[in-house]
Length: 502
Ligand code: NAD
Image (cartoon, rainbow, N blue to C red; front, side):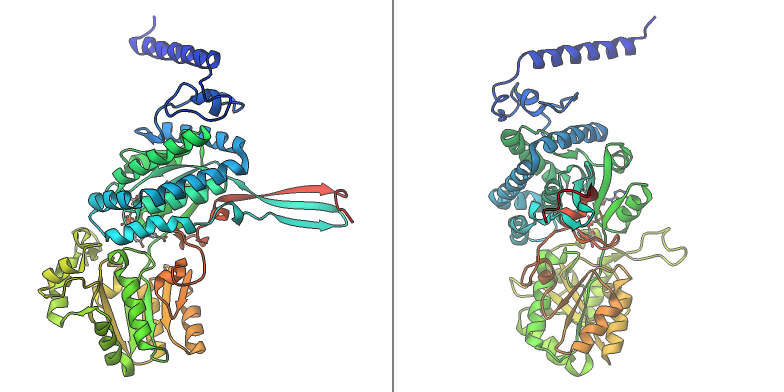
């Protein structure tokens, strides 16, 4: 005798089979042309052609409550994308870039409203910057030709990539991940930060609707709503997910590495700056202010502490003030520090480890100034002050627009302290110098993924320096600034003794 549960299951299966039969018998209006109306009956007729048996998640446009369903839908979308060839990938990239540009103001606004961290102008800029994210042109095959014929190494997709995005740039990270992943022929399932997922869901839906309208692929960039640690686990365990790409702090990096899946990890940083006085102090101050105040210092590459040679210290501090940063007194720094760090009990085995107070992360300088007891001119972008080298603001990745500046006696001391503050993350470091020996010494000692000389940290991502951008910088696992190649498998194809044309 069957149980009520089994009866319900059988009913569902019968309904699903009937619905599929109906779809096969009646392809929708867009089927022949390969274009479908959103939510129209033509979805599987067009998108499913030739792709084998599919469950056909309909009307979801990438947004799933169940992580396993999202992974299954993304797997089907991956197969569909494979059928569309390189032209399909190019189209996806064009759609994502176009939508980021068109919705930059609105999406910047909803992200700021949800997260309450950072600055609207920079959130908008980060969405417009998607234009510069590299696409399929990055995938040059490597060819070999010799007496034994021709060999080609090609960059092939993995399939479904499970991606985790940070609270600091939710939609921008998701968008540039989609661009890189799709350029390489993959689909994605995102687990966004719980404090920044609603905006990501809105953008994901819009991306998927447009991709569906133009390519008849419905769930290429899936997202779990709401994201939880359990949904991350489900994504990491799902057999369709072949690769993880996580962007965030130490917790998520550890979780991804422990998952048993291959993981591209864009981890934390605490970028130090060294000013040795051989270069232009005004330029150094301007660059430091720009980088450290960008989006209220939320960027992982952003300047987080500065070391200045004693002989040039006062001049540098004066240059910082001249270019609009506001200097706090020692007592104001103390008041701010008390509020900026918390010591959760139970951590640090008898010596509690400080944790940055999330309530102050990414907040405006005016908010920090109020807490510090300082009055600052309207429009001030950055607060700064002299601190000792072992100050919490130096040691912790504060992600707020207050910058500690440390006086050092020598370049050697500055480099040693910078290395200590960077904690071996191998993320980013900056030097302002015209001395090649100092530049080389710091680059070698810190061994960071990004090393910028005489510019702001943003020059490392192509803003004011040469190079392409991405909001996922795979520091921990060493792939560097992510690009389409990061998300590929290298496959070799060998033709023995033939096809060489000379
Ligand atoms: P976070 O570590 O709090 O969260 C990042 C993401 O990881 C979120 O989606 C979060 O939900 C998830 N997460 C956290 N712990 C997890 C766990 N144990 N298991 C599964 N998922 C987990 O970081 P944040 O505050 O959102 O972002 C700031 C941090 O990210 C900083 O440390 C910054 O340096 C880093 N970051 C790095 C890059 C880079 O490219 N290297 C880019 C942006 C941010």
